Length: 111
Image (cartoon, rainbow, N blue to C red):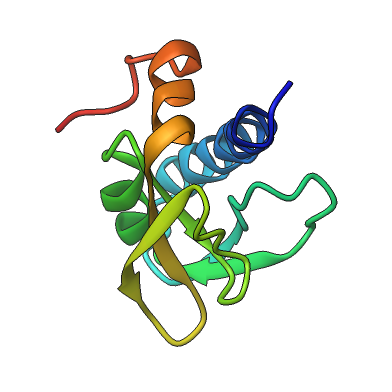
């Protein structure tokens, strides 16, 4: 398994965790910033990003975009498309993007 494939799979796990957090926030009608798991490609990362559920939803709607802690972006497989004080939004490129096309279910993303 290559680097991009491992990173994409790790990010997919973190995305699933965050979707459950977002569902809970919606169920309880939360609008203030709450912790979401950093969606970087590092399997050993257990850091959190604080943002409003609506902002997370906007990022997660984009198939190739993920939220990460500043410094966790990996320029080999992604580019930063938004910079915020406590988190970045990255977009997958190249082999990592192709891996998402192969593995990521389409049901969540609405472009």
